[in-house]
Image (cartoon, rainbow, N blue to C red):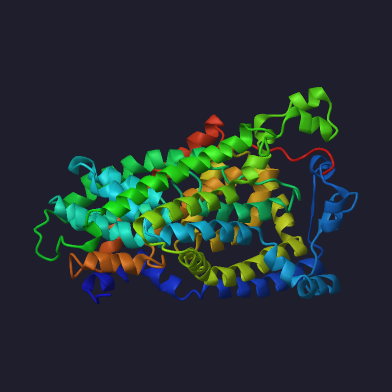
Amino acid sequence: MSDVPETQDHAKGFLGFVERAGNKLPDPVFIFLFLLVVLVIISVIASLTGLTATLSDQVLGGMSDANKARFAIGADGVIPAISLLSPDNIQRLWTEMPATFTHFHPLGYVLVVMLGAGVAERTGLFGDAMRAAVRGAPKFLLTPVVAFVAMAGNHAADAAYVVLIPLAGILFASAGRHPIAGIAAAFAGVSGGFSANFAPGQLDALLYGITLEAAEILVPDYQVNIAGNWYFIAAMMVIFVPVIWFVTDKIIEPKLGAWEGVDGSTEDDADKPLNDDQKKGLMWAGIAVLGVFALWTFFVIGPGTPLYITDAEYIAQGLTADEAAAKEWFERCGPLFNSLVAAFLVLFLAAGVAYGVCAKTIKSGDDLVGMMADGMKDMGYYLVLAFAAAHFVAMFGWSNLGLISAVHGAAAIESANLHPALILGLIVLFTGFINLFVGSASAKWALLAPVMVPMLMLAGISPDASTAAYRVGDSATNIITPLMVYFPLILIFAQRWKKDFGIGSLTAIMIPYSIWILISGLALMIVWVALGIDLGPGAPVGYELPTTGG
């Protein structure tokens, strides 16, 4: 990383403060461990001072006896704060530690999806698919194509950063345009549009696992649907592409000036056309994807409908014919929604194997198993983080502080008489601010969800809407904080073309993207909620707590 004047100037401003403050923060694992100590202290004080919250009759009536016992809630609906140093909680910590870790919902979701995604990435499928998509773009559509592929490339995780962003600089330079404008557009798409995509993927599995953990504070049998934000994230993609196009062509590129081609070179292996094997691999990968879609469709409509609940199955469960007929389609599709994590495993695995065999990156079964194992090796740090996060979330629930905070927060929202659109808009802004200091999407959501999700459920807002609002805020400020893990890498990509390009320079050109992405994402959130459009299949904005036992 170059030591340049821009970095020193940058350090004097607000973003310099962000950089200095953020650099002083420990690793997210230690943040969780520190917060656990704080949580224990607060739980002891709350228990000694008699901190409580009282559930409404509606919420209390919808709770099962088991759930009331879980939170030590009496017949009067009072929720007491429980010390984490109580004998029961100390015993639970040590005796249930393996279960606390392995039953952490995001862990299973992410590991299953990554078994397939790791193969798709290591065979070269993700990288070569992005190269093929961007290289053939007409010059006048280069910016929107880069933005679109960058957001779609989020499914490729690291490959989108490592392959697409430097490739965008090369392609812009080849077209006689400023390469740093291409790097900025791709960075804005990959990271600023982090949650936008035309289909759910790994991020949905990760976030929805945490959402489920938080929703179960109130509703133990809550059923999560990892496609619950599908419509919304697709709309984000439609909105963000023209936003990035406008900012790149009308703000950033004019500011950078004409490209003279003196600092960089347009020659790079990443810009080479695909060979015949790679083209054949992409074709067969596409066929494999269609095959998986056909297979899951067969599971829904084929004999026995294993992923769709029919009237006969409901009647066999004890419902009358009228009750069975009244069931909504998204209730009938419960098995389908629950199968989507496995579907993504099969999808990525089938496409990756089809590509790898044709492109000769998979030559034997050992290669395939090795790629799956390497994908799991990359999850080593996540496993450590998940261990700390799992215990923080679990102990937060044991103390009852999450539920107490949610009840009081919901009461404050109700007394303020705020529209759900305004509530979720404020959450977008709050998340965007927090993102400047804590870069990990999963770490932030694990911290916020145990309070935010139940609080909004009590206020009549669904966990799907909470997750969507979080995603908008989390995406917008990724590209302006030096704490973002890929920020130094993007800086190196830019310095290839302009040697004196520093942290301040990169931050300055990304600020307009961040502002416009935040404004457009916030506007989309508010309008979407105001219109009451479902965020995904069977995922409305509003939510009603169960009014009967269970």
